[in-house]
Length: 334
Image (cartoon, rainbow, N blue to C red):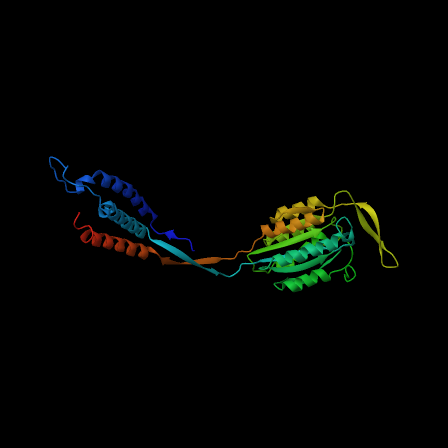
């Protein structure tokens, strides 16, 4: 059953009159009946009639009719809500991923790069209303896929990225990667434009200073979320590829330029995160997903079905029944 609402609930205050009416009725009950004064009643046999016992029912019917009228005045009704969704105001997002050799480090499982690919693909699935692009960078950068609403294409680009297919110079050119991502968004007409910049090291390559790239992002009102990926302390780093294709690992200290990443995020209105484990990396992308929500305008149309008529008819029926009873069954005793 649909929820019943009342247009004028203030009329329910009138229900307080009903207890007063009941009290008044019992106070005046004797005065409403005819009396006969005689010196003695010994010669009269008293007998109670069912009509006299049921006489208060007439007053009850009148009270019930009054209650129905009060409820009708309060205008009971049931709403029928229709939702109409407007156009989606989505967000344009570019993920700038560090693909330097150090991303093969094994402090995340099975390594940083594979952990990132899985989380990034899940992030794409969650952004159903937005357009997403992918930029990869190491010692230089390029656009893997431009901003698009084709989510399967974006996921394919993420999953197909591997060190065997990358033909770019090794290193970590954070400024160049950020500038390439900005270039993909500067002409965007979306209401909000963001970059998710992920790296596991320090800027040691490229021709663009990261601070300059951050200034450009700020100029275009592009927000940058920065993520430093890597555990605290030591991690297994790839040292060289063996003749059989396997990779030789050695323990090295994890070095991430967190001050630089914090500065970029703060300057552009974003936020810096540190991902030290697989679960923390997942939490970071979920947090960014919550921070950057797409607006979905919704208009609600209310169509009310009035329910007061049934109470009006009930009141009318009770009053009519009470009037008929007074003029037929109770005519001889009233």
